[in-house]
Length: 121
Image (cartoon, rainbow, N blue to C red; front, top):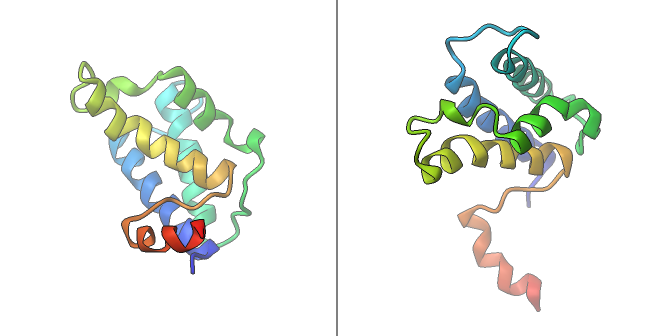
C-alpha cells in the first residue's frame, strides 16, 4: 500500500526533474528561476529529511502555485513552441508536485492500475 515515504520519493523525483531545467541559475529572489529553485530545494530537502507534512499548507507553495498557473517558466522546455513538449517537461512535473504536496494525493502509477477494478466494486 502507498505510504508517505512513497509520496516523499515522488516529490524528490519531480523536484529533481525541474531543478535540472534551472541548473544554470542561482537560487535568488531576483528572478522567477531563482525563486523556483528555492521553492524546489525547500520541498526536496524537507522530503529527504522526512519532515514534510502532507498536505503542505498552500501558502508554503506560493511560488510553485504561481509559476504553474502563470506559465512564467515554460520557455525552459527543450522546445517551448511545442505545447506537448512544454506540458511533459514543465507543466506535468509541477502538476505532480502540487498534487502530492498541496493536496497530499498519490500519483497514479501503472502498478496501481490492477487495483482499480477492486476499488470500484
